[in-house]
Length: 134
Image: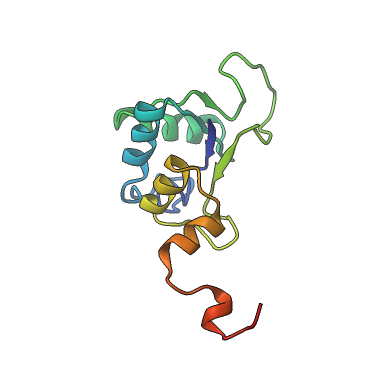
């Protein structure tokens, strides 16, 4: 699976152009997904130039190597950042915000939809909770 992951607000807390504090379990989870299931992790960020190099190096020092950075393939030649092709996008700007990295791991590992995840963590459905007849 190809997983595109944002940097600021997703792997680290927002501090752009500086590098914020690492979000707990972000790098550990991405490394685990690479090791266990051989997912291709693509860094997908608005960072460019020196700020991008610093982000990549920050992750590298913590043992996270990306398959590609702001591109679909490491050999692809592009002139500007564009949306990469991925099966999953992990970004703090998702509808609902960034879930806990444990939740992200479970959803990817078990290939769950949000609906499946929600239903697996609650005893009552929306209909049951509000006593709506189906």
